Length: 340
Image (cartoon, rainbow, N blue to C red; front, side, top):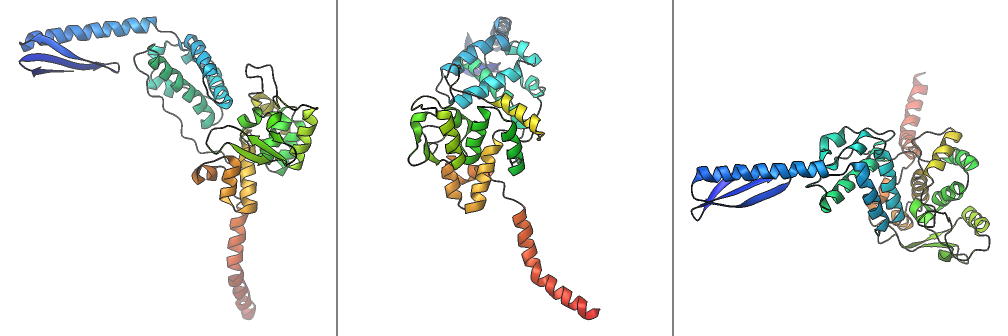
């Protein structure tokens, strides 16, 4: 809040609810200028209250937001991310709040089950919803939504866990999981596979689009992937590999099926579908030591991102330490024998 003089006339300049108000009072006397400024501020407050009374609840606004999500050029995986995020928000008290009443503190008070990454799915959705509400003029400004700190996924699907999962997984989860384990493809890339993009002669899967510029790539098929796709193919030469009755025409998630399979297999909740992609990257890096090759397979543009997906075995550390201790241990044993 400030008054300043320019050309002998007093001007006002103040901000309210993220909006700036400034102009001339047309007064040369400061006391009269302050009265005009106070009146303008009161009018601004009244407009704010009127807007707050008119704004929709988060649940009411979600209908418009989800229609927008479906109409955008977002990848199917991103669309499902926001749909899933809203389903989480819909179960909280904040869904019944008016948009103008949602604050940073209200968002920080939200609690969600499972990992920080899971909570951030809801928080990112809330942030995007409020951002669109401000962009569309439904609220004056969007509050800052803080995300939880993520420490990354460390769980891998070892041979035993893989056997247990595939033994209880129903279709299409069984084929989806096999594809990710053997190709490192993103779940969204698997869901959007088309028969036209499979080169049977060369044993390659072509991914025409994705999250990064290197997502457009060829992926080699393992023997069990080839076998699984041949069984699923049933003479098809075009169309979705994983068709469904959804709006997109293809499967967009197997989250529920994975949770059921994980529970039936008696595995930790730390293991998620994306763990299969991490497992693939770790195995390929361990076998080849070729980071560039791993980046190409994953469709990554930088090494730092690719390294997140790799969880080298600590057995390597044990081996190095033991090898270095070998000569020293031999000398120690010799001296020990001599003393005896």
